Length: 72
Image (cartoon, rainbow, N blue to C red; front, side, top):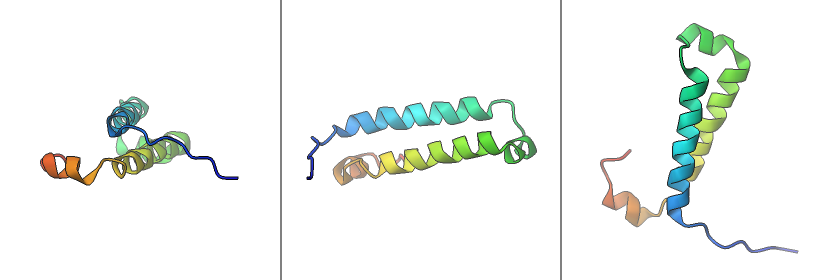
């Protein structure tokens, strides 16, 4: 049986991306590259949050992306 879920407003995905980015910054604060790479837990958590940013970004409608082309 398939359940349908209402479409989330795209603005919520922006908030999600900001939250994921804040997590990345807090996880990596004060680390140099070697410390970051050698800490599997921090590396994996950071990578996962970057993936989540990318997934949330795909939910932003094309018309909004076109309006704000200065944001990569």
